[in-house]
Image 1: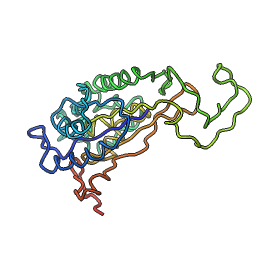
Image 2: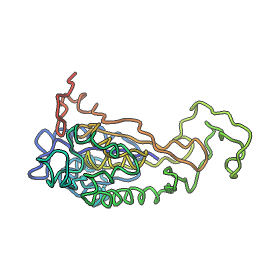
Image 3: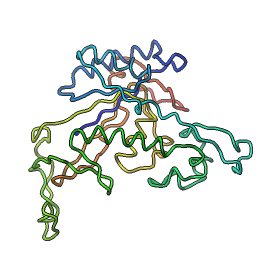
Image 4: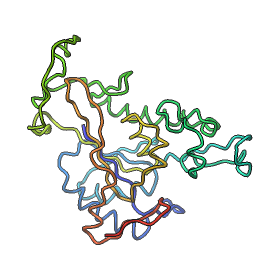
Length: 280
């Protein structure tokens, strides 16, 4: 199972569209996407800037995308508590993923993958419920393709395939037993040659993309919101590693890839970033 997340192009937020630069970015992106083979399904945010980014790619491939309301930007707001340590901010509203360092680092719950939404700031909003909507949305899609999230936080594969690259870590594991030992092998055979590969492409937004990734790999989304950046039309790829039959865990293969822009001579946009980009 492969998931590809594409952030929208350079945004015209006022009109929920793309700037002229963003339109050039989307055209260069389309040339890259058109070379991808065997895309199972496309999904898009309902917002205009994401749809405008997807359109050139879908037009070239003569494909359509499924629009999901929960793929819109994770723009939900909370507020600082009345007894907040910065008195000037007490009681004021704020975006749930846009904090200055002294605020973000003031509560270690922000780094807790299970309790991040219980911090004094986050619990002032309805953030956990909105987060659950997103988690349910992506898990619902994965379930359609036979990947079912379990209570441990990874995924059970409904119709697992044999993978000759690996042996079970413990003999008898597939039968529920643990005993003996197995020898792990290096990846020698491409997984796509072992069974039909499923690739899903999502045209969406920085905040929602990090929300989904945090859920898939077991991190607090606040760490991604605050600590990572991906540029407009960048490509982020996650794959499942299925080293033991019937078990799948997601792993980030590529984060914020903008080769299509560099190769096309288009500068990388810094939209949503509060410092200078490295230009090579």
